[in-house]
Image (cartoon, rainbow, N blue to C red):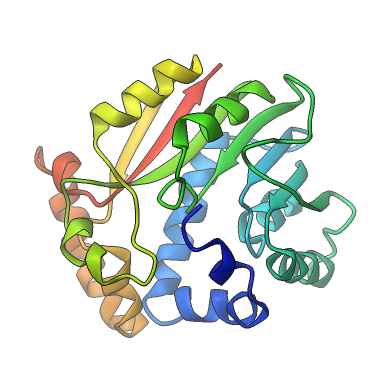
Length: 234
């Protein structure tokens, strides 16, 4: 996986949320959480696995809403951040953070109601293998996001320290077919890429976001969007 050593560093875990979800990045955090909740629906009493959970911002959010959550990640420092978040909001009884490899999920077949991964597939070196594992341990639903090949994301992708894997819609369709998943719904967003929003103040980000969503609602929005959310069924 791209950036594996970087991702497991203590200082990266400690600064991860502050660097990505402050300033205009707050807007990104709200939108991503809304996308997860919209896809998963009512989560109370559902068993959910988050693959590559990082600092646990989604796992803790779901646990607060009554889900029985497991957050799995390869980074011990990231998992420590997640456990701290869960304790801070009193959700540590309903979320478990585990060190593990997304390519070899340590669970039996059909173990969870839903399996999700956010901010993961752009780093995946073998996305078909990862998606097959997610499907294997899910009884009902698999949800994930991708960065899109033919979008503004490609304009600055070369400048990122690790680079990102970008996907076309055709590639995602092929991955879903290969994993035995059926697409239920797809959402496309952020004509302006994440990196742009993180560089500007939150108040200014809201203004640009209005323009962004306006373009996204046009017929061309699907093709210009830099991020897609994929909600699939087993």
